[in-house]
Image (tube, rainbow over all chains, first blue to last red; front, side, top):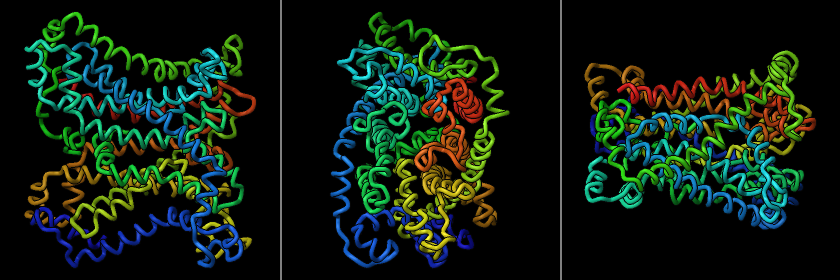
Length: 302
Length: 325
């Protein structure tokens, strides 16, 4: 921390300069050490994944000997059935995001652009709901889904368990609160004149929402959509709870089973884990700005 | 777009556009101006999300409370029997896993609060200066935030393994009797899991503080340095207090994350053998053999009651001013 004194100065004194003064050496050493440590776990997984099992058996995992190739990825992909799991992730993620954004933007519009009695109360209820640990409501939700009879053409279990819909519903309900909170803050900051003018022109509420407010919220919606892709893709809990048949699990929940499938073949397990990281990395590289904006916009996220 | 809108709005005197709801009298007029169609539209816009929220979040939460006073095997509704406080008596007096779980949850909170969160703050402060490669460092620290906690568990499993994990190789114990099974040994696995959780949490805190630091008025710092304060003083006496809204958010996030902790321990060993957590106990009693919904619900209610503390702090901070004005 000896280098801290120089930290705050460049920006306040000379806002424009990209200073890399010599007094930052300590900072750089610290950050480099931390960054290397930060990369070790993922790096080790990737390193293990790139080496054939035969070579690691021969030379040991902690060695450089032997070949490096992508064979483990190909094997993990087919043996692990990743295509199916990614498909499941897609089936769950896309409808959830559409539902979350639709419902939360409507709710946010109603509480932030129209005045009526209970808008703050409802907003508090929505925000609080998102902050609860999911385990608090897991048991009753599980029993409710189990007791709800649905036709067999819809679900082979005769109830909502073991369906994609159960996971979509739980995720939607849980995420609406968060998005409503963020979007309502965003909408509140938009000038009231925007909709006043439309009101004078006789535009109804729906048109104010759909043609005036929503288009203006595009940056916030993009940020929320990106954030939700990651949240839903990464959701481990709801599928674990609701989905019993392995072939309907999304990839995040399914990889845990691979620990059994790839028993003691750590090279395959590492390859499987790396494959699972790839979609998030793509989103990260392509949409990093939206993701970070989403997180900071809604730093309420629990 | 300004990514700090939310973070900053709290300490700026007034938001640019006062929300319609705060304007007293015109309130009533506005709703009366709505046409019949508009009222129907409004009812749908509010009704659909509220119904989802009630049916899938709040009613189940209430049912958890009710079920915690019953005995039920989870099979048919007719089997539900009132049990009074028996489940809570069992939890507090007889359940072998409850007190370890409480300890672990507290440890989880302390570790995040004392290690992970300050580390994230330190990284943010260091990266907030215009040092070369700041973006690259940020990206590296941020990658774990994008990963699911379940995946974090698996990745660290590879690192922590007894015979083939990197850590034991580096320590030189791999393959010897001294090798530690970091996730398996009940005397160390909670610490190993906490380091894995820190790997993710610190990056998250860093991102939020980076946004918070950008929102601090530069002239505050200038004034402090003119007064002869050094950077450490400036930070602790000026910058850190000025980030109060962010600090509150981060305190709340840290508490809630430690109550929600579940995925990592479930991936490792389903929250047993040194890794008991209250959240995991809820699920153990739901899916485990000899289902006991009542006891599981009692754990859920305990979790709920504790969670309400940070939730209420946060809500009163966020909405308190709004409803007063």
